[in-house]
Length: 433
Image 1 (cartoon, rainbow, N blue to C red):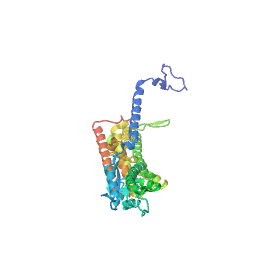
Image 2 (image 1 turned 180 degrees about the vertical axis):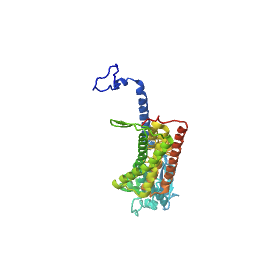
Image 3 (image 1 turned 45 degrees about the horizontal axis):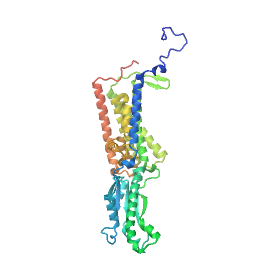
Image 4 (image 1 turned 135 degrees about the horizontal axis):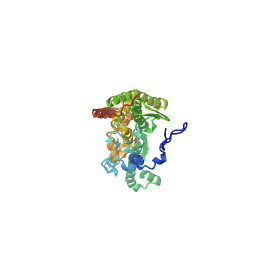
């Protein structure tokens, strides 16, 4: 072999290696596309990920919380309504914040919505509330009046915490308002300092779990992480299968460490290639989902009920993602993996509502949540793991969206590859064996 000067290379010496990296670093065009894409991705990822969690309290709107007024006591002297009714009316009509979406329910209705994951918590005024308050100014007082805050950890630790904070603040404000009335009414009796303190803030606020979940439920986060596993299984599995098929059919190089191979190109059109990839996705996803459940439930001991249903749901969810990945890769080619990453992960995480309630994220993410796959899948997983697989807890909608998503993936993918085939767009000129 000759070197660049035309002189034959001495026998036994290594062949020339071509241009050096230092020479290529001076080419602006080589820098342009990687620099622009890297900067754009870093900027978009920062905006999308951080934009959904920077200030949940500022964005919080209409977080669903039940307001239960069970007070059956008679109104105090000079008042038309009992204290429970007054408190409920004040909370609903005079709230200075739009953070809570109060729902006035009976105790049974509130429990049903807690069990269905429709509310993040509840504020419960007991039946004897007015009578207990009235007794504080007499010798018949037996206990401090109590308002109960119920939490729903199955809706996620942050959502449940936000609801608890809102409910507790409302109850404490009600206590101070009642305290002013009691203090004024008892002024003529000249109560001692201890009594004054009690009358100024007469109501105790207690917190209880309204819908318990298992101790191995990650404080309500296992649903999110399990959903993320399903999405990653579909996403990574789809890309691994796509690359493996392309390599096996000779449409991509196989390079592992210093070894590089190229198989003979198999004459097959885009439609048949996509069909092959989708069938393989359906088969291999069975294995990946089974291993995810084995690791999560059996080995790590994650609390899970309805195991057969969870397995079937997990398979269908991961398969829908995998089919979508294959369709996007077939339609967009080399940038397909980047596109599918944005569709299933980048846009999906902040709009899933699984860690930060959708009521506490900016409107852009609430809009995405209507169709982004991760939100639909997490609702179904949460319903199965925490809410007894109730359809109205999100499982019915999740099944519907899985079907819609899989259908869109199939239709879009095959429509694009058939269009390419009709136009004669071949993927690669066949290579000889």
